[in-house]
Length: 243
Picture 1 (spheres, one colour):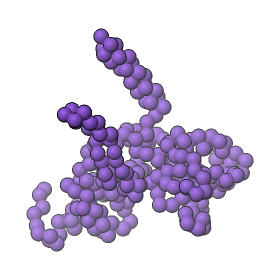
Picture 2 (cartoon, rainbow, N blue to C red):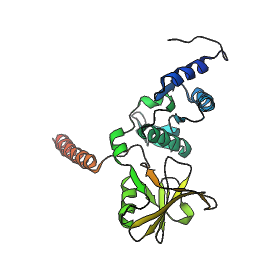
Picture 3 (cartoon, helix red, strand yellow):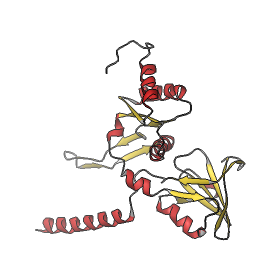
């Protein structure tokens, strides 16, 4: 169905009503970031209880690698990633995998490009619950496996975790909040969200899901098989060039 109309004629409102009637996860693709941002704001006001997400290219600047034969100049790839937009992309991916039916993703055309395997992303969610038994060391390794980095007090940033005695702080890649996990021996005694600036507790939680810190996560098996294929291809190409 094509909606024609001047600005302010109710096209977005009509589309919002269709989404409301169907009650299914919805994807809205815009041809540029500016329009996507406008629609994102409008739909958040139409659906305050829904998970309205924003998924656009996270490059502030991107220069692909290039070679200029006439001057024999090689230009290296250069890029700048916007961390806030990366967080919004991870939030959209996490919401879609949460199983909720009220997810609305407003995206630019860049969403058609590959972002890694959603199965791998979904399988690598760390699920925590008060009362479960897990060794502190094993929990830290599980965070590293899903691409979180160990940090210290002064550089605690999104996509990292830090350790203070029997307490682990983690700042998920998809969240504006950080979380604190208290251990008693090998048991998770408490989980709470806290303010980054003051360290002040916000809420106590019974359970917590930590999604991977990067969309491009891959299983260990996939990495191993890919590395082997690359090595095999390398040997073939070397032999070819030497001939």
